[in-house]
Length: 318
Image (cartoon, rainbow, N blue to C red):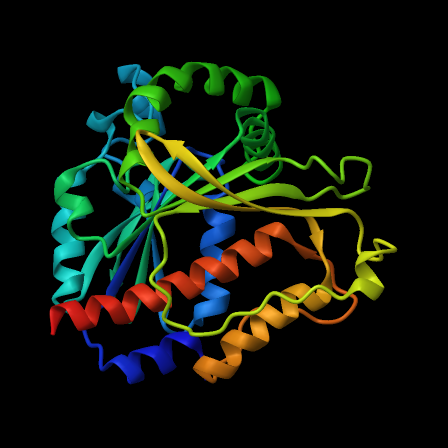
């Protein structure tokens, strides 16, 4: 049984649960969105990319000298209307932006699922949209990490030249600072991503990933994190670091859990088994021999937070 199916049945939920994932282009939003879908169950999670709600196509933006990050380049009115309709359980006709052609494809029918993830540049931009979201996440990678990812994606996946991508990065930076970065202050969860501090010499180095949030009201009574010294002492899985600390972001005092490197298999599996035992569902496939990155474990913790918030939300509504 998938997370979404079990928890919805347990909590008696009907209204779609809306998750908002915000952050810059190439920030890793899609990576975390995909992991969350895997954990919660693809059959109960539907995703909407806010790029579909651009007001202008690529040529029109170029002619107007405007970037996709500028509010005027997006249809927040239609987005808010569509989200409200989905919350009422209604189907919508959703626009579709084609990144390959830079134009719009025909609208498609989109049906509300048990869980809907909104992913985009402006997910938390307006108060009207924020009020329609049940749990919000801001993905906030280090600048060098973000730019490296964007170059790899836009050159490798979307066919743009590296020179054009670099020029676009420089052109978009002021709009990011003015229209996207401020949204972090409204997020329930903040995912920060930096270059690894303990595994930089590895062929495929992982990242240092932090999850900052308000203190969690625990919905699972016992969630152990087990470290097997027989693997830890010889660093059988490679160097790693786990750190808990308090941070101040945007004037808010938050608790931050940071993981770096590839985590020992037993550590990740003990966390997964604890959640499985208490929810009767499976999560990420942490198989023996598979490297478990900090990104994997943080995604599992976010899914756990979503489950808790989903049921807390229903209790408050009741």
